[in-house]
Amino acid sequence: MVGAAIQRRLTWQVAQVSAHVRDTPRCWRISLDVELGAWLPGQHIDVRLTASDGYQAQRSYSIASAPEERTLDLVVERLDDGEVSPYLTDELRAGDAIELRGPIGGYFVWQAGLGGPVQLIAGGSGVAPFLAMLEHHQAAGSDARLSLLYSARAEDDIIARERLDEHAQRAGVEIDITLTREAPDGWKGRIGRVDAAMLAEAVIPASEQPQVFVCGPTAFVEGVAEALVAQGHAPAVVKTERFGG
Amino acid sequence: MVISRGFLGRRRDGDRGGRLPPGQYDVGDRFPVLSAGPTPHTPLERWDFTVEIGRQPAARWSWDEFQALPHEEISVDIHCVTKWSKFDTRWSGVSLDALIEAVSAPMAAFVVGFSDGGYTTNLPLADATGGKAWIVDRYDGGPLDPEHGGPARLLVPHLYFWKSAKWVRGLRLLDHDEPGFWETLGYHNRGDPWLEQRYSGD
Amino acid sequence: MDHIAAHRLDGNAAAGRLEDVFAVEITSVRATCNGCGATAAVAELTVYADAPGTVIRCPSCEAVVMRLAQVPGSTWIDLRGARTLQIPLR
Ligand SMILES: Cc1cc2nc3c(=O)[nH]c(=O)nc-3n(C[C@H](O)[C@H](O)[C@H](O)COP(=O)(O)OP(=O)(O)OC[C@H]3O[C@@H](n4cnc5c(N)ncnc54)[C@H](O)[C@@H]3O)c2cc1C
Ligand SMILES: [Zn+2]
Picture 1 (cartoon, rainbow over the protein chains, first blue to last red):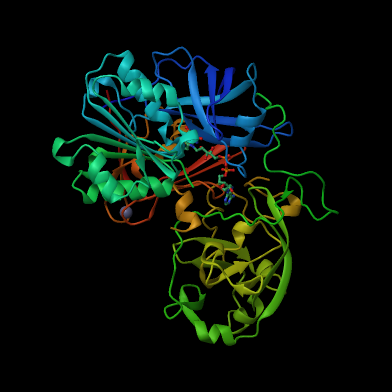
Picture 2: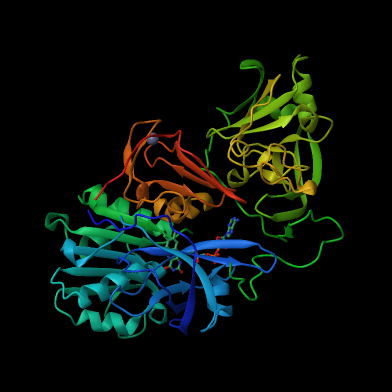
């Protein structure tokens, strides 16, 4: 079992925003300088915002960078009617301080030492923890087979597009993107929602006993996990992380 | 603690003519859905409403019988402990006075509302009677949406909204107080928003 | 799937709040439901976080396994719904 070496209570720490960059029309990459020690790919942090009158709100965000990278990066999707995400995407600037607690998690985690094959399945911003796993896979020189099936709305919405294209060139890595709303002329990837038929075709088959990670909106994650178990993947190897609705 | 420059949360300014209790904000047209568990979806043929004395059923209404009870139209402001308030919500339902008068329970000093899914909340009899609380089965002119507590929920608008138990199935009349789901987990036993009784000890 | 179901989370979402109190990696802890006896990792439990507090339920029978509320100055935790917690040591 991959165990985080957390043997202490978590406390809130102050991080400095070192970069704040729009990645897609709806998602921003936020880089943070903070002393958290090494994190594991797949872990997340909690962010806490405090208004001047003491009102507080907290939310979880996956760590999108590998422990081998210099900054702790988040990928935050802006929900128009949300409380916290529009603040993180619209108000927060490089140089600002922000409170966070982490790293958190040891279940939804993959490290090179666990080997492969590994099937990652993401809906929307659910790709964030998998970006950390892909970077770690490269930095650690892992030869585990790593396959990502990633559902985005449109081509513009593909998060970390350039990095994903680069990862796709590496031996042992497959990046399979499906667009659910609109696909441009000449689109070579998949089209349509991730359903049982697409999973049967695109996912490393149960006979090869992949470790499976599913992440994204709750309805997406539950639908995918259910279909995978119906296709013979053992419930215990299908690990899920729900982002909510 | 770091103050997040420019962070307000969902809140808007203003006390809305004295209608906002301390620490609350006006949620406007939205009606947030808060839930401690899945939506029960009890079919109306199986739904009933029970008034218990102690733990003994003393009166019971089927859905049709409940519909036939005299309903009142209620227009009130509601206040959630998570800090949103919503003005002029319109409900229709049966007053708790009518339901409690259907049984004889001279010992009763407290009421527990109990719901499908196991949720409970407690009220002193004085907060449950005197035209201050209802079992409502209609919202804004239509049937009460399951996400908002349908088929029927408790409505106790003068207290924080967690007292207005969703999916309510009955009332238990007691001679002693039995704190409910949130009241046993650090939330205030009474929950008056105007006194800002959010947490135990407030 | 209704709005409440679409907004439910899993034990990953409650882990930060729990590790604010317990000095263990909580998502790998295995909890046995006191209602139906099913065992699951905390990460696999169902979490309702929109309510005043955090309610953590059994994925098999929906019974409450843990409840958690953060109020000023304290965290309240109710573990009555967890028959056992198995905590991996290393
Ligand atoms: C472990 C974990 C990791 C995550 N990682 C990421 C990540 O890497 N990137 C990312 O972008 N997100 C991630 N999320 C989701 C993130 O935590 C937030 O939920 C998300 O950013 C939305 O927060 P918000 O405050 O903007 O929206 P909220 O204000 O929470 O609103 C979310 C939605 O719910 C509705 N809503 C809000 N409040 C209520 C209410 N009271 N009643 C009913 N409906 C309501 C809103 O209309 C909105 O559509 C993760 C979640 C978890 C649990
Ligand atoms: Zn159970």
